Length: 255
Ligand SMILES: NC(=O)c1ccc[n+]([C@@H]2O[C@H](COP(=O)([O-])OP(=O)(O)OC[C@H]3O[C@@H](n4cnc5c(N)ncnc54)[C@H](OP(=O)(O)O)[C@@H]3O)[C@@H](O)[C@H]2O)c1
Image (tube, rainbow, N blue to C red; front, side):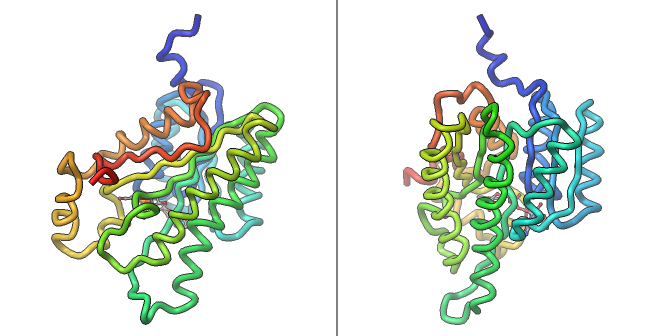
């Protein structure tokens, strides 16, 4: 019988992690490499991807880097193609690339709003499509990185970001019902609370401390705490879980 902890292993799997040039994407790439997967990473900053790739390779795993903008469907196809060609298969997609802006709706331009939707929502969809066509023979697991801000606000003007992350919940639900039964592709979402990254560096001084009033655990999350939840969803440990939204937020959504 498979030991329960073995179900969390990703040996011989290939995982694509988008947005792995900084922040949580780097943590996903390194955590999944530690679990035994070979990794393909993408983002726009090629030099930063190389830094991540070196760290993955230091863990003894292969790493393919692709400089790509996920809002471009052709670029997403290229990411999936390079992963399949150079690493042999595509088993896991972590749809992590995202941007966050805070612009008052009274003066937000169409282009500002559109850009967030294009990266966070359309980018996740294009990557899912590109990867699913390579998972359909032997199944796979897609994990969309949403946010607690898909279900609540953070007292900042974030209509585009909140809308994009709420849409991730609907996207996850629908792709799960389309692909799980037919192709064995599970589709789930994480809803992170507050984690230190380049994105949260942009918050006003004192903002996070103020927000901690809403977090029962009264602290921000550690990247590994999100990666562990992602590993559960991506690996065989989560083999009976699809269409789910898993908050990793220290309890923020219960307040
Ligand atoms: N940190 C938090 O508290 C928190 C909370 C909830 C949800 N999240 C979500 O977690 C994910 C990771 O965010 P983070 O906090 O780690 O922020 P981050 O450090 O700013 O990382 C964002 C990543 O996305 C990439 N990216 C942005 N636009 C892209 C595009 N058009 N094409 C390809 N890659 C793109 C960035 O790389 P390049 O700039 O090199 O392209 C970077 O690698 C995001 O989806 C975010 O919404 C974060």
